[in-house]
Length: 356
Image (cartoon, rainbow, N blue to C red; front, top):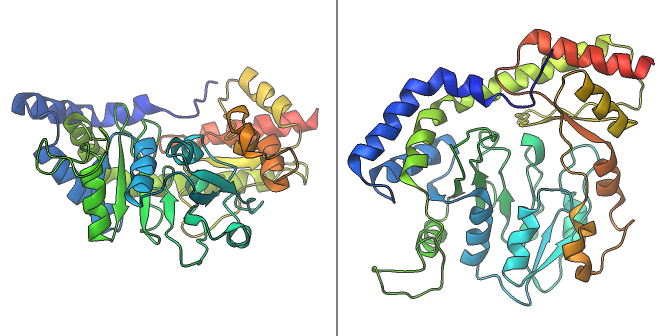
């Protein structure tokens, strides 16, 4: 039995006719940059994401980058964040010449520990950047400092609570484009306008530049595709939660070691990933691969131990909860099209591994 971690083919086949029509509509219009498709998608996304404003950008990475730029963050500034995330979370900070200051994670949620984040705040801290990892909203620390939420994996889980949320529409996300795309959601009109300005090289009017921005524009083709997919977000999130509940029932009935931990549930968790913490994680992953079950490790090397950040001065042991998670986490298939028999097979194979 072959069980993919993500099944984009099933998702796209169900929507293919509408996606083809949306692409044809953009081609016929010849409006490939900006225009009515992008504006309409931004309006629809703001409603779906529980925000007053949505600004489409070129990727989730660029959403983080332009949000930090809109706050004026640069050399000499610090941003408190998690060491347990995708590289872009910290890469965006470093690209602006600012310093990422790490705080450890809560081992139950794998999200930034709010108390640890507050303890890491200094006079140079300009923002806190928590990540809603695996689709579970992080608890946000209250330090009177702007909070930029990395919501790349959590669209549909919770409305904006900080200054903004940065969204990714990478093809495997909760709503995926046919390439790269992203957005910044916010309730702050002035901040939204600054992001819009920065995404087009800081030009207003055209060819007159008051700021140095970048080319962070959302393509009309991607916006049109995302408009087809966005109305399905709620149903897809409900399907993921239903799969998570089925996994819990199946694991409860299986004979498994007590050390194997299921993800802690929370009302807003939408399970972009269903991530267990497993003893002998790497051997288990190999066993599942040989049985046809695709899995992934998010993430095998904490950010404070990445070679490119060695000059920050962090060493192994600095953030034990994040380091332990990197050795134990394993994402199982949980995509909306996952059939019940596939879940039964996954849990059966995991039980077989530990019964050896």
